[in-house]
Image (cartoon, one colour):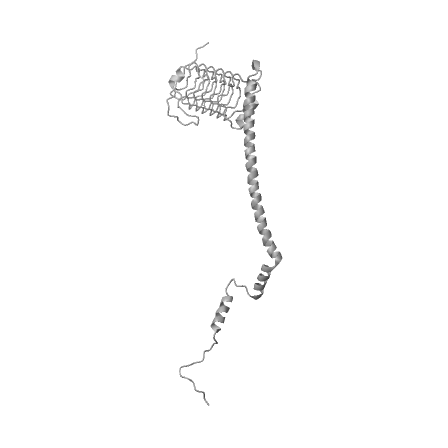
Length: 290
C-alpha cells in the first residue's frame, strides 16, 4: 500500500542542526584554532603551578630592572654634582695659589705660576684681567685661553703657545714673546708697546686697535693678520668704530706680511728692510742705517 503523501512536500536531506554543526566544523578548521591535544596542553600549561611562577618571576625581574635603572641614574646625577663641586673647589684653589705665589716678595713666585695657569686653561676657565705682570712663562701652553684684559706686562713668554688665545685689551707692554705661537690670537686693542715679537708666529691674528708702537717684529710671520677690521671676540665684525693698529716705530724687518690687512700709512711709520715681504702695490719705509 502506497502511503499518502502531500503534494509539494519533500523530506529534508539533512537533520535540524546539521548546518550549525558544519558551520562549527568550518570555524574549527580556521587558522589559530587549537585542536584537541594542543588545546588541552595549553590549558594544562595555563594551570600548571611552575608556569604561573615563571610569569610572576618575569614581572618581578622587570620591576627589579626598572628600579636598578632609576638607582643608576640617581647615582650618576650625584657623581656629576660632586664632580662639579670638586671642579669649582679646584679652580678656586688654583686662583688662590696664583694670587699667593704672585704676591711673594722679590718676585720669588713668578717662576711657579705656569702649572696653575696651564691647569686653568685645560679646564677652559676664563682668566680675565688676571695679574701676571713679570711672570716667567716660557714654553707655557695656553692655546685658546681666555686672557682678555690680563696684565702680562714685562712677562717672559718666549716659545709660549698662545695660539687662538683671547688677549683683547690685554697689557703686553715690554713682554718678551720671541718665537711664541700667536697664530689666530685675538689681540684687539691690546697694548703691545715695545713688546719683543722676534720670529713670533702671528698668522691670521686679529690686531685691530692694537698698540704696536716701538714693538720688535723682526722676522715675525704676520701673513693674513688683520690690522684694520674691528672685530669682537668671536672674529665677527663688531660694527663700532675702532682705530687701526698703531705701528709707529715698529720694527718689521724681515717680517712676512703677505695677505695682511694693512694700509700704506701704517707701513710708512714702521721700520722695514728689503727682506720685509708685503703684497704688491705696497711700499716700505726702510730703517735708517745705524
